[in-house]
Amino acid sequence: MFDVHVHAAPDVLDRIGFDDEIGASYAAAGYSGFVLKAHHESTVGRASAVARSSGLDVVGGVALNRAVGGLSPATVLSALSSGGRVVWFPTADAHTQETACLPRLDDLDPRMDRAVLSVPPVLAAEDGKTERDIMLILDLIAEHDAVLCTGHVSATECRWLLDEAEGRGIRRFLLTHPSYTVPGMHPMEIAELAERGAYVEITAYQLLHQPGMTAARLAEVARAAGERLVLASDAGQPTSPEPPQALENLIAALGDEGLDAGWLRGAAGETPRRLVLA
Image (cartoon, rainbow, N blue to C red; front, side, top):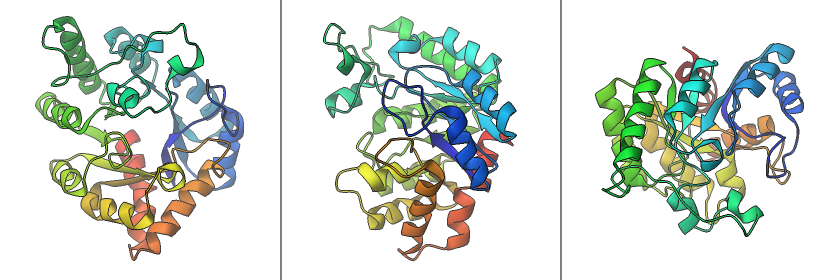
């Protein structure tokens, strides 16, 4: 088993455990490794430390939010040159996050402004520098053979990113929980992008915390994803189970919807491991 989406302390939000404690929980559960994610800092150094201490394949990356410079090629170059494997496009600072009233760093202090980030075609046409920076970011992801994750941007932006990724030879493209509140994609849209080569993430967090989400709805998404399905926990919240258990619960819930157990375990093991590491 290999979890591509887990959160740990230290963080600006409360987490269920620190990096080493999360690593120990995965080792005890027999996982081969996991991807450590944070919304507001690179996890490359943290992941490397946990990998050395735990013996697991622990991978880091960077989410392109304002605290790390936003849509910054320098941030991406630093993360990937230091061993990072994953680049998430904006999550907490995506314009969709603000519109949906989901948590943002700015919530912590009223003196912070509410600026948001976007990519074409939502990006303002006159913002040529940001568009050039995004193009360089995509080139860096391609050159390092890293994983492009769409983050919390809109469905329109996800489609644009896939178009650009195809043109640049990016082989590893993951739709970040596309059926979550943001971007809120329909299974038919998801199926279309999966057929074009996008991997499709479903997370335990959705089942635990997404308003209105059910195992039956997630099973529709899983069927739309087909062999491109990736199951992850997106856990680490104090109100969620330990991340390995959260992922096991997701697999069980989808199995109860009639999905093949072997396929589901592959989507939480070999498929994400191959996406990130092979």
